[in-house]
Image (cartoon, rainbow, N blue to C red; front, side, top):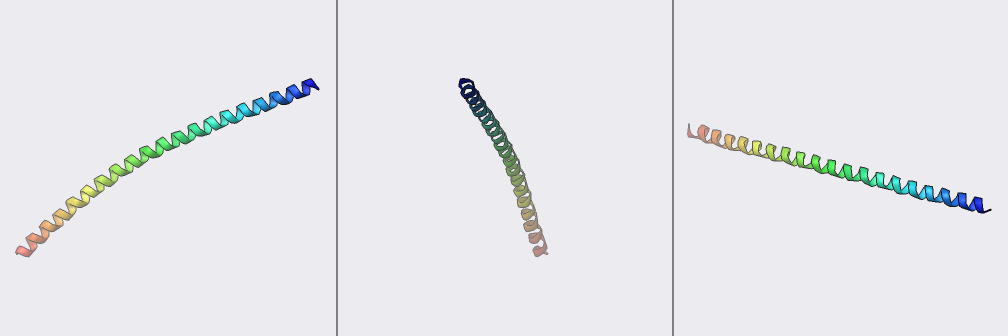
Length: 72
């Protein structure tokens, strides 16, 4: 009987340790995903800013062309 109880306790300890390791791996993966998403978000923000600057330049060019056309 004592061996059976000892085996059950050993099995439970192993299961608990495995779930802790699995949990740690999950949190590590989630942390890495979060870091990757932050990096991707920064890239998107940079691309957005570049696109907005280009749009502003185009709008200014269109305004200048309209002025030139209206003067003629």
